[in-house]
Image (cartoon, rainbow, N blue to C red; front, top):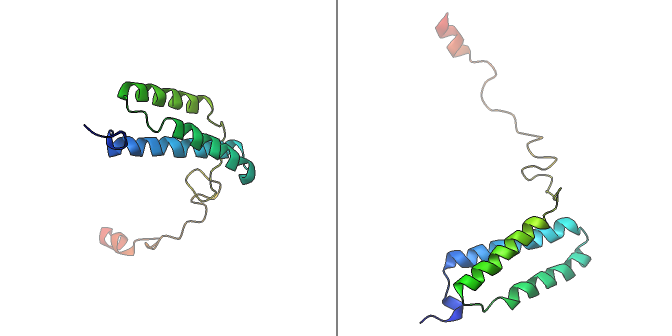
Length: 112
């Protein structure tokens, strides 16, 4: 029989880590000041630690479903996006120029 630490797959651990990171990112969207956000991050970590040793798959599925629903309810309507990230204010603003010729002389001379 497996121990509680190895009872779930690595995909499950990745899912929980993703959920944790989404919780932290959402909290940071609501609270921009890092000193205030740090307290909220510690509370989020404490919530995750409370359910760390849950080994019942059905109970854990219910906990995760409630966490996802809570995250959807608390989602920020206008999340912070880094300026150079996709969706940011500087995304693709200063694209490097194309290295292709502006006018293809060879194709034009072959057509005439």
